Length: 346
Length: 257
Image 1: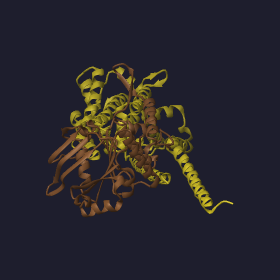
Image 2 (image 1 turned 180 degrees about the vertical axis):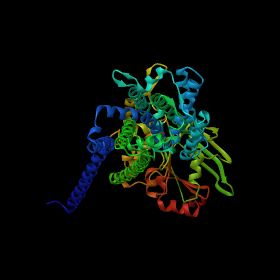
Image 3 (image 1 turned 90 degrees about the horizontal axis):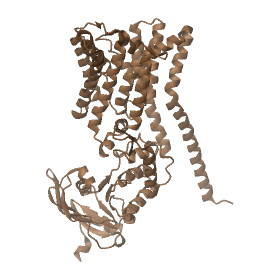
Image 4 (image 1 turned 90 degrees about the vertical axis):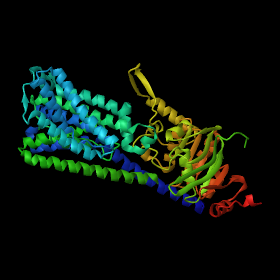
């Protein structure tokens, strides 16, 4: 005969076990969702488009999506690190226009060297990032406001410098960056692959990446651990600016001109891509592969809308709605995670 | 206890915030290898005393001596330099990082791939050293070193926070109400840890107002009231009634005799 106490203990153990099983079960699904959710969504979008338009799923079409995604993915990778650190950068689109314009002015209007022009594009992007980062880190201004202001400033500068006109006439060899192929693979996709590898490495293996996660997780803890939080914030925005510069070079080559208004709207795609790819606007989480999948998804949606002959006006509505839905999913994810944490705490 | 020189001596320390005198001349000695508890009601000056020691605020009057030398602790960085580490109730960990990343946050171990040029994180050594440290402190039952910190229970989180400070040659460890948010078993873990840290030769300053924990864990107990130290007792020679009387009345019955 078991005593009453033993029975009670057995019962408590049984309850504990069933709860653990429940938590484990939920956690497993959660893990699958977190890890493969973005990829599953991307496949769903492509599958949906293929069903609606059977001619959608062809190799040239997929390559076009990849090409269109390349610029968005570079911007998204830049924004990713910023978002991981708990910030946001709304200025990536228009500062891409600005980089393009400074490069165009030097190369086309000034008949300068193409390679120096590319460096100028990168430097412009980095400079904008440094200004953003400095204002945010040292004047303690909210990232949303600083980069929203910068969105306007960069757009205005790009229009002023170019007098509002597109610039044509880059040297012929420049077309290789956006339109060339190496071993049958479009060059922008190769550039993106290299950028993605380097960015993943930075995110995982270097202080810049680690501290971005730390600051996004708990800025106070990072500060108490002796991390120079302000300096790293500036570096994170500058890194984003660096990728903006690269994206501007690829896009300028693809459209074979420098256009002062082309970038506006890219920030929506970049932020949506990052959030769809699993980063949280609350900071502290996200990864490079997710951001690329998100960018592919945005490009696929835009391409699909074009195939379906949806007007650009309606496309704006769709992209805006997707951004809001993505942020709502992020919100749900945070709530779900809190719930799991509570269950786990027992 | 072996007779030796105090590691920290506080002499006549005063501190006011505007018109409010938070410390009105505090004298206290701290020794390596002991757990000294500081108890007192809200507003007794415990927190201010801790802030003074951890470099969060400067003192108005009096002296702080470390190893017999007068020092001034002007910033948390100074405090760290003197080997003083403070374990806060919260805000100490990054929830989204794993345990070794938290323990080594800001002081990551790196290995060189291309000499002079290229350094990457040495994840393996960080994991091994964290494992060794947690074993050393006998913090068991951590399922996985690579799980993120938000997956841990309150006691485990506190353990990681403690490991983080101990990892870096802290001699004086301030624990500010470390068990305030913890359950029974987790409180147990933290109290044991405080004892083990003192056995390793650290001086543990333990702030709490849970009498039972204090009596059980501390070697000596300092009672504060209204910015003064009312009295100091060996934990073996007192009980919670006497401590509470001292806390509330601000009188030391023994000193009258």
